[in-house]
Image 1 (cartoon, rainbow, N blue to C red):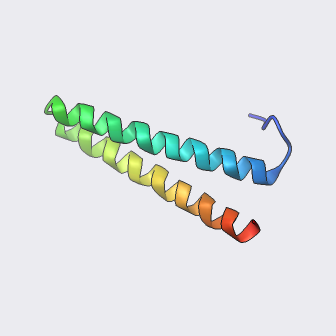
Image 2: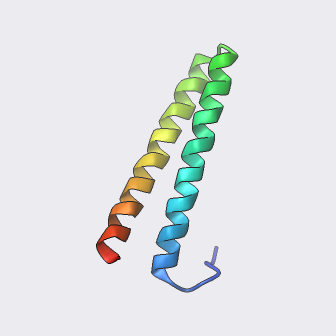
Length: 67
């Protein structure tokens, strides 16, 4: 998939945004699974949220170095 703008910094910001959005959604999915008593899905979504948060933190670190 091609970025709409050929700019590595834009790509970093976009990646950060989408990773944070993914983390937020995954946390909501985890809560939904918890309220339905589905521990396996709850744990899966928590793990996914944590991975998204790690990606977001990595993108933030790189952006801080460049700004």
